[in-house]
Length: 181
Length: 195
Image 1: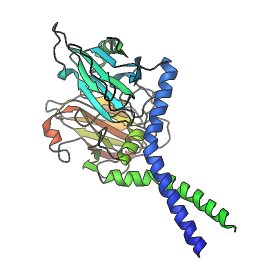
Image 2 (image 1 turned 60 degrees about the vertical axis):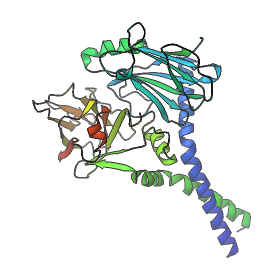
Image 3 (image 1 turned 135 degrees about the vertical axis):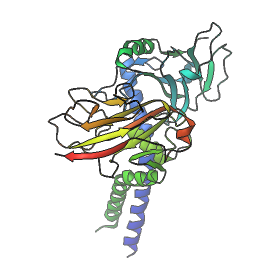
Image 4 (image 1 turned 90 degrees about the vertical axis):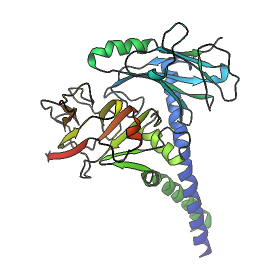
C-alpha cells in the first residue's frame, strides 16, 4: 500500500515537472531552431536575410502572410548595438523586435516615422543590449532589448500585384548591422 | 515487482502523461483568455511581454513573431459561423463589409499551419484583390475548386479532406475595433455544401 502511494506521488511529481518543462522550454527551443536555421543561411548573426515572398513551400515561420515580404535579422548584442535602417513608402512597412523569449517588445511602422533632418522619412533604429549605455546618435530611435539575443523583422506590404516590384525594392534596402559609431 | 522498478515505471509514466497533456491544458488555459466574435477568436496577449507561459507556448507553436495588439490584431477561425469545423471537402461563402483598419487580409492555412498548396497559388484575400460593391461589402467562395469571382483556395482540386483555418489580420486597427473586439462587424462564414 505504502509502495503504491509513493509510486503515485512520484508519478504525479514527474508529470508536473515534465509538463512545466515542456511548456516553458518549447519557446526557447523553437527560438534556438530559428537561430540555427538563420546561421545556416547567413553564416553569421547581425546580417539581414531578405526572404522570398511566402508561398506553400515556405517553412521558416508558421502562418506566414503572403501579403508581406519579410527581412529577418537574428541578433546578438554582445559585440555592440545593432543599427536597423530602411526606407518607407506610401504603403505599410514596419520594423519589429522580439526577445529570445518571443516577446514583441518593439514595433514601429511607417506612419510613426519622424522626418529626419534632411526631410526624409526612413527607419533608423538602434537596438542596445540590456542595461547598456545609449550611444549619442542624432536622429536615431533608441530601443533597449530585454535580452542580448533576439530577432528583428521588417514587414513590407505587397499592397497589390502591381506594387510587388516596389515592395521588393523597399525590402532590398532594409538592413541590420553592428553599430560601429 | 521490485520497488525500484515500480518507481522507475512511475517516473516514466509521469513524464509521458505530463508531456502529452501539454496541448490540452495549454488549449484549456488559453481558451479562458480568448476573445470571440462569431467564428473568429483572438486573445490580448499575442507578443505581449506579460504573456503567461501557456500563451507563449501557443504563440511559439502556432504564431511565432506575431505582432503585439498595438500594431496588428490576428483573428483566427477554425469553424464556420454555425460552429462546424472548417474542412476542405466543403464549400463556404465568406461575406463581409468594411473593417475599420489601415489594411486587412484573410489567409487560409492547412493543419500544419502553413499555406495550402494549390495550382492557382491562391493563399489570401484582401481589400485590393477582391470585387467589392459600392457599400464596401464582398462575398468570397472558399473551396478546393476554383470558381469565378472572388475565391480563396482551401486545397487543390484532387486533395483529400483536411481541416483548414483562416487568419484575419487587421493592421493598425482604429479605436472602434479595440473598443468593441467582440461586437465589431467581422466576416461571416456560411457552409454551402460538402462533397
